[in-house]
Image (cartoon, rainbow, N blue to C red; front, side):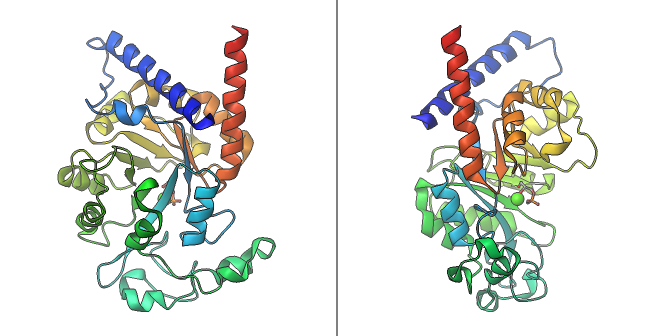
Length: 311
Ligand code: G3P
Ligand code: CA
């Protein structure tokens, strides 16, 4: 029920935005939304389980993704690296050092070698209060294993990491998505979102699969600003943008939304930040604690409903 309310309210927001955009067309430099973007706009505000529920379990492992799902995450976020033998695996860093008991670059490991590493014990050591014996010896999952585990009923928010290090990464990603019928031609548009900090990688994806919804990640080290020209350019190939939540303000959020793009800040772990961002109008966010965000979204909807009742 709550989920339905989120979808409904976001749809109303989208329609309002489209109406607003249609009234300003012709006398502004803002980009118009892509023809088929409204389908994505009408999604609910997204609770993206960042590396799974990685505040509770070892990031990018099956148990972390399962927890994210149980905690009402709408999307599993997956960072991709590629092995020496060309297999896409779920890992954030280019090296295995931080999240396994191995050392060295992912690209220097074959899948068989990578599978021998322990991707869970580091979490137990760093988080004794959340440690579980079942995390010991967890494997690094391949993208295919994640999809095989969760199937087409789950939604995936996939990031091409270090694409300059892995030539052919985009083609291989598309091959896997096609194999499991997760491309927009086979699935509801939005079952898979592809994100990257690399515009070149997104443009490659756009060339290979023009209907695939893409999200441009932007790295800001100072308070964020964005020009109409930049928004127009991003609108050409992507449906949304993502950036660090602590570099943006309400004006930035409104400007992005007025351009027709989605906005998904990362990585938002405190409830007060989640609430503030929802108040500003973001269309979702990445969090290591999808349980907290689910609570905040429920309260947010209840408050909205009370205000409507009073009107
Ligand atoms: O993909 C959104 C966010 O995850 C980007 O930062 O470094 O956690 O992949 P990172
Ligand atoms: Ca990421």
